[in-house]
Amino acid sequence: MMATTVGQQQLVAARAAFAEGDVQSLAVLPLPLQHSWQRSRAAGVQPGQEPYYPPLQGDGLRLRDPEDRRLARCVQPELEQLWAAFGGRGWTMFCANREGLVIAQQAHGLEDAPLLRPIQVGRRLGEAEIGTTAPAVSLADDVPALVRGNEHYLQRFAPVFCLSEPLHDLDGQVCGAIDITGLGERDPALLQGYFRQAALASENRLFQGLADVHLLAMQHDPRWLATPLQGLLAVQDDGQLRAANRVARRLLGLPRRGPLPLLSMQAVFAGASAAQRRRLLQPGPAHRVRLGEGSAVYLHHLRAPRAPRTRAAAPVAVADVPLRQQQREAARRAAQAAEGNLSLAARQLGISRTTLYKLLRD
Image 1 (cartoon, one colour):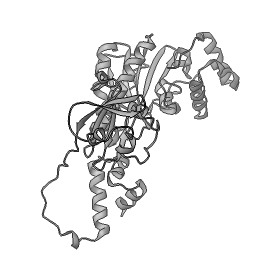
Image 2 (tube, one colour):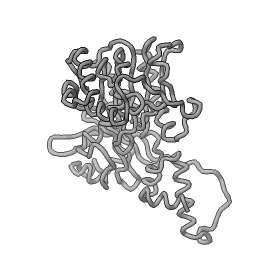
Image 3 (spheres, one colour):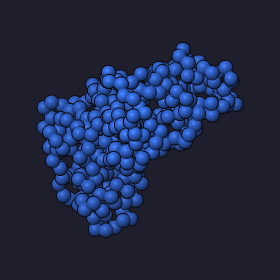
């Protein structure tokens, strides 16, 4: 979590100097905020201007993108819990997607603060519109962010406190951020812990949407299983690792971001005994699996792949259908089953996104 002990008057002076072209004045800010101020200025935003709030996309109620709808469903239960604990008049909580578009929100029904009213589902709130904010920093740098008072690039936001936590997709890439914004002051250290757990729980729900994989939970301490702090592994029937959440990546020493390398469960748990490896994809209670010398985790097989729901249709002789047509039809079905998430559809088919695009365009 970024924090600062710089006084508000020093920040006001730094903003004025930066507006005159003094880049050295940024030294009073944490490095991610320095970068955000620079991006805001490069986008043509001036510190003394009023924030620009672009029109809502659609009616602000129905999200167009299936990925946005999926992420919003995963985040909404956490926003409701956070709001019950920390919400109130003068505050709002929301989730923005990777482009800064608000896709889920909790706010007081009678909220009338001019700085908070424009924050609505369907509105984009990026640096090019309103300058430096906590979610903008989280989306750009994949870090928990805290922006208070005159740390904001726009001086209009001097009364505002905002704190955010990044969200990651199945490939470990930043796909959004959850945020609390309000007028006043809160305990950042307290909020950070709760928002991090909310982010982890939201990401874990994304894994629940994978139907054609084994889902496994893991942790060094079995008491953390069935909590947001559990590691999750999505494993294909052939034993290949499809995806791992950020906790599992850390536990197993896997790359923090990006698609995973081709790995089998046998390779991931090479330190396990033969008997332990045979149980990896078998239902049953949590059991201890050795990782290496002096290290082990508790592994719990949560569920096996779910059979796809298909509609009855007249049988078609496959031999009568050209191969290219079969490939196009498989690509179309996979994209539809993944609700438009082409990265997920491509992984399920075992092909590249480029190949999938070509099949869908044919």
